Length: 264
Image (cartoon, rainbow, N blue to C red):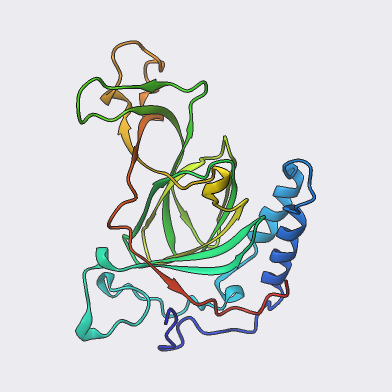
């Protein structure tokens, strides 16, 4: 079970019971299937502003008594069954899954990582509910700049520009990425125990070409051949990305949503 009621941690609260309902309703309106075009910037800004007001209590979590326990996670693991923090799972909580948008939550133990991955053709809004998270994100350089290595075992890479590289802290950790801007390819690293509420529209769907692909980033100098694609002094703003298999150490477990019921 995802949530264990230990010392009042992650218990239901009565504050703002309608906040998550209002967020769902606005998502439903913003990402309506009848829409003939992508949501306007004004519509996304309105959704962003509402998401920015959501706190852990609105999704059934308390941010009291959060302890790192030297990396042993947030879920009250038995003291005799502790494992190293890098083996602790990230907990994925499905709040709503539909054809037009998905609402979900990720709960991170300290130092856990969701590796660099993309969101093809998607708009994603994220809110750090509690704790601190390092966010590193890229956008592809257009037109595409690709380097194909002739040496066996060396990856084919594509040039990307760094969009975000910072620590985001609750309650001010709201962000939005777009299909071609805002850091569509990103990586999360938990600085402290933390949780992130995500809205993905449309959701991943491999049959529609929205497959989640993972990447490894290489410094610009690793594949620069003296042709000066990037201006001198700006090399730190760029990296070469190579497709990798889904990381074997990406350890997630399902959790149960404990927030207010949502009327769909």
